[in-house]
Length: 235
Image 1 (cartoon, rainbow, N blue to C red):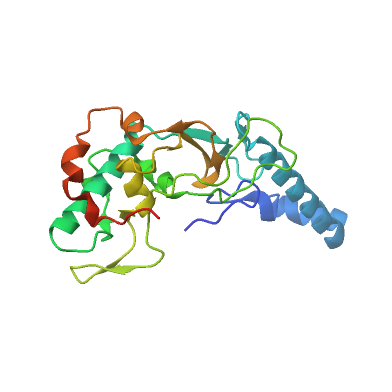
Image 2: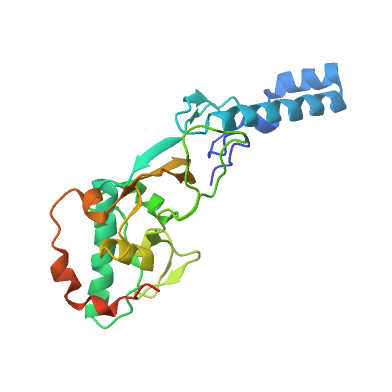
């Protein structure tokens, strides 16, 4: 795994946050400034870079180049649209198929590319129910919902022993109880969009969407609900 930039947090192959300058310039700077003044300069620049990056990670913020690692930094707004609703439907259908076979409904599905059939690769954002990053202190712009978000699917925290006898974690996903209720319209709405950067959630929009609206195509729920009582019921 590549190291993460200490300014923007994104993975980067080589980050200047620690070194600031190349080896030759660093040696010259230390010789001119001395170790203590050089370390003070490095800490000050790091703090300034982090503040600059965090200040643009807000709704509507501009895209900038991270001063430490050079990668693009922008807070993106991703809608729960057809590309994300289809993976959710597929995981729902997998859970129902498990039930029909007499297996637990929460069996993991191997959702790698050859099973995904070209569906959205960023379906992983559906796992966020609460924001795991905070907005820039003092931000007073567009209202953002930090809790009660999606939480519709989940990935294992550690490797899982599969039925083929292999331990695996990568590519495994399953629908959650909340995801089931959303598909079955027992949880009528969830936030329409998520604010994210580098696979982290900075909150959700205040407007809502239903599963049917997100899917954007005909969906015969009646057939799937013929034996829906086998799924966990909401409290």
